[in-house]
Image (tube, rainbow, N blue to C red):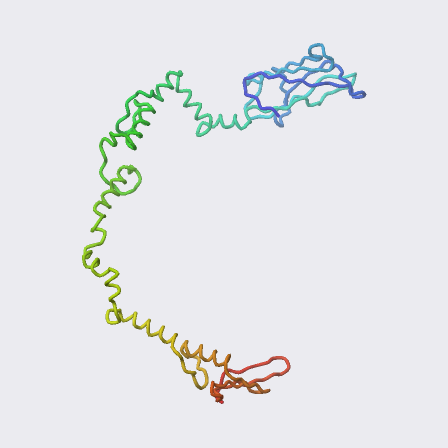
Length: 315
């Protein structure tokens, strides 16, 4: 379906054929009317039909002057329909020959958007009376760089040069602003000045703090090698004592395992159960130490549905 612009004239063609044979046949006494959306009012103004166009039998030419004065509107859909006429003696009233919209294409809708669409761009372009006016706004390469805040008198090129000068030019920023913390309405230059003020002096010995001399004297490879147990913190001694327990031989625990055994004894009881002798009867499971002495046992029961072992108990 084509989309046209209001206040324009467009043309379309269609072929009329005999119903019996399908051969192109002249449309007689034809009238084309337009229907708008679901409106039943026919529009005939501005619509001209030429049957057997260019003496070609069955070729029909339609001219549509789609203006507001003729009853057409933006944002509407129209159907061109034969409302009078016959072909080979048979009425063709009701035949749709063309459909079109006015101002409904994506481009047309965007152009009508005056806020942020092509319409807004067109409004800006309309303010530029001539090509010379546009060039004046853009500026020439030989123009001097702008100074200070943007105004209505400088060109785009002048502000481009100002930015280049600030970034890499010898002039730099003519008047560097005072430092300011990042916030709305604070310039990048103000924040850079604040960063500079914060890091000034953080180099060399200043990076080591106020006790840099003492720190340098202690934190050397030689001094670290001289550290012995007397210099280590108490906490490090405690850690060492624990690791010594983990690497030293550990005697087997005795008796029934308690619920609050130390982690080391809990591991030892597991080791005993895996390593040492175990005897199992129909009612008892007995655990032994390395010397063959029974240390604890579990009572067993089986009612043919559930097999149960009690907690560890004394022999």
